[in-house]
Length: 169
Image 1 (cartoon, helix red, strand yellow):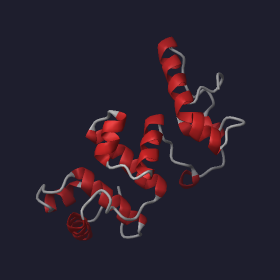
Image 2 (cartoon, helix red, strand yellow; image 1 turned 90 degrees about the vertical axis):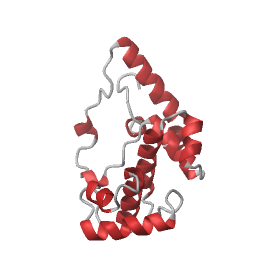
Image 3 (cartoon, one colour; image 1 turned 90 degrees about the horizontal axis):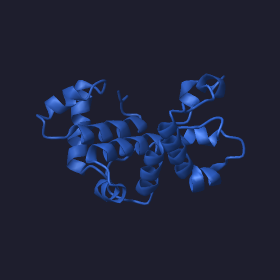
């Protein structure tokens, strides 16, 4: 750890002797402490070159990289916490928790946005996405006359892409 100084849980996982149990039990605490030490002492993180670590892996086979905070949020979402509950538990801004939720949806390949977006809004966003596509969210937002937030649009588009309905940007 001292040589590699991983800044992410994915980097921590690559260390010799780290399996899923150590990653889950100790990963977030280790990475946070490593980050704090490196910041305080001006030491660079991720000493092992990413290209050497990922040699031979195509991007679609690489595991998503989650920060310790995103990992913590992912665990809370797995337990069924709402966005508001995660905000309170982690003392984070709504926009940050929505970013964590999007990472959770990608990581778990969730296809149903119902836990976070009501069914009428899901239908409206889905219909608008069919009309204008999903390359960009702004056309969907504009078609819905600003009545649906970008966060909700992003979640619906992302879930629907996992269901094979369209491709998110």
